[in-house]
Image (cartoon, rainbow, N blue to C red):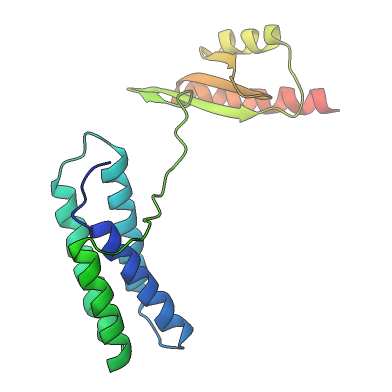
Length: 177
């Protein structure tokens, strides 16, 4: 796994601190949670994509510094000491915590290349491939069954895909009746 200079551990500590403040009834500004989500997304992106620049870590660090300044200003002396110790351990890499990587499910079937789009539609019941082929020829798109059960992929120029979807919906309703 890529080195993130212990920013992942710092994120976990700040996330815990924000939760503790909320549990104590302290009003935490909404921007703190926005910045935590942004930092989580940037860190996840950096960890998951081998082509991301190390400059992304500077953005993460800036967001976490903002969150840290906001949260520690809301703490009492006891909580400040507790979480400053945790932050120092996180910075040194001595804290054993797990960063929650946020993954989005990538689907190789749904793609965009230039003006060509692909959409995936869940079918209520199976439609004959001949009817889909006729519809595809009529609209200039490609219909094919997905690798997933009960799904079809429509690929083509976006406006053609939209028109095909409209006719497809009408055909689908006729089959349902």
